[in-house]
Image (tube, rainbow, N blue to C red; front, side):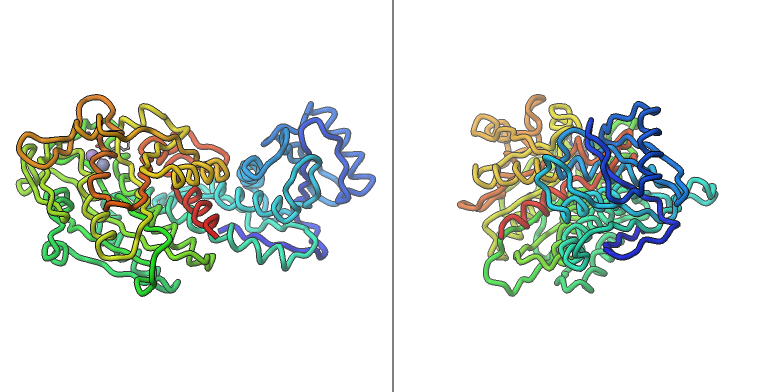
Length: 484
Ligand code: BES
Ligand code: MN
Ligand code: ZN
């Protein structure tokens, strides 16, 4: 993995020299000597480079390679992260580079913040999932090992970088989990993986199938019973603490075939990512632990595989949830809400949790409504909703509020049980959210993030290659850190 270093010392001559310039600004940098400055000026004039974010000019001076990096118009934290991501690609075949951190005119960020955001972008933008290639060509692997940031007070800058370093680590971890094929990442393997995080001081407990049966997680088990991969529930945090600032709940369907209500074949492979919510919860706790963030957070994830089998739940079956409420399962492909309802109930009834955020790749309907620009947020509390939306803007994992309400809630009343797991053809995101709301204890603040449209990157961006995005780790981390 790419190493990030902050220093005010001498920089070796092998390092590619990088300077940033805003859109249409003059290039003035103390990092360049007169010869270099002249060379750069000439190259910039010839290339038509205007400083647009993510564009570069390359010059070979006597001292080695120089890259002029466009910072764009009015650079801010997010645009600097994106620039970092573009730099990761630009430097793909170099070994060491040094970014000379200088003030940006009209930009409110401190020098440390400028360095932090670019470094964070480099860290997540250089992410690759390539473990299953056996014959990848040498040229296809990045050779970039280290990016140095030349700054004043490097110790202080390095210390405050911990927050971003941890977050970068957590985002990459979430992507690794989500990109993993479902034959490797079964509920059991996922649980083992999580257990290994106890080295960070996290308390981790895993309930296996037997424990889930004893405790009567009837709904969750109904979604798992068609699979030979047994379900797991796990949670973490510090259960001895008085009250938790927040409880996180994640959908961890390691593969969603739809069950007996089988999904169509096209694109079904993407359903290996139907555990993104769980990966985000686990990674969020990892980030907080690495950051030593002063917040008390507990998380729970429900890990199941939704498969068709002679033992599988049939459409029309009625099951009893952990809360005691009965559910008529009209579509076995609406399994996420079954998993979440039970674990939400478990968390609230066993721990001192009054603010609850669940995150899940829950509905195609929300994906259709918002595409990959926003995740949907459904929330019973305006303050919580606004804080999350704000964190979404700051972290560039944006949330758009969608409605709950009695009109939608009525749509999941069943003729023969307390509720059914299916609304009508319309407003699928809202009826799913109303289903979850029936498992929120009275008085608790709750937000539901439906990330079905944003969990996957189809084309690849500066900050994320094709595949899993790990959407949610950043917005939750910004939100939880802002609580103090
Ligand atoms: N995991 C899917 C939702 C999903 C769809 C995630 C597309 C990512 C991309 C979920 O379990 C599901 O199948 N939902 C159904 C619910 C329906 C049967 C009520 C859906 O949205 O079609
Ligand atoms: Mn499904
Ligand atoms: Zn699903």
